[in-house]
Image 1: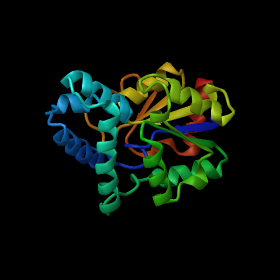
Image 2: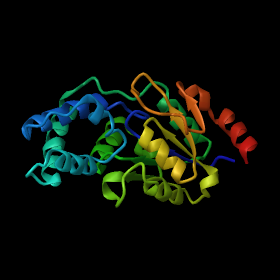
Image 3: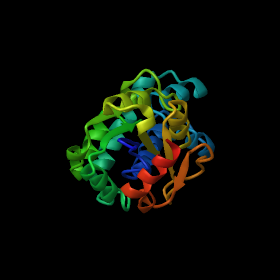
Image 4: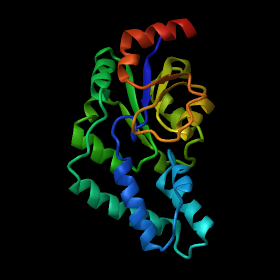
Length: 222
């Protein structure tokens, strides 16, 4: 039986990617580097610090990775506070509410900073539904390493076999797979060039994993 659900945030609960993209490119301009679309896409699902470490190595920057992180976060904070278009992804609030009403334990496991996570949760009043929140930026390893999902599953109090991950990125799906947790790949209009081949199930609408449906699937696999 499914008892715990581990949600990614960007691309699953809310689409902040356009805001992050603007903030990253403003930071790229600050340090005078040109990042190709292919390189940028490879960052999906990784923490800001790990991305900035890669940039410093790739472009032999004299700035410290932490400096790049602060530049990017400064730009993101301004954009976040001044962009009224940011909304929850279609159908996700209904599934969050349903899972919560059915007494599933919900945990947020995102590569975003805790500051960004808290801003999103406060803006959309989501704290009432989740028992814990994990930021990859606060952990030793970043997705595709399984650390964040291992900790998130432990926080539910249940076995990993009783948990499910909902992810939209290649790195996130790899992390769930490495943690040996059932993974739903959410392939939406916001997802670009991501690999869902190792996800246990791929959906394009949250209606496909309503509580009754997903419990039937868990009965079959367990």
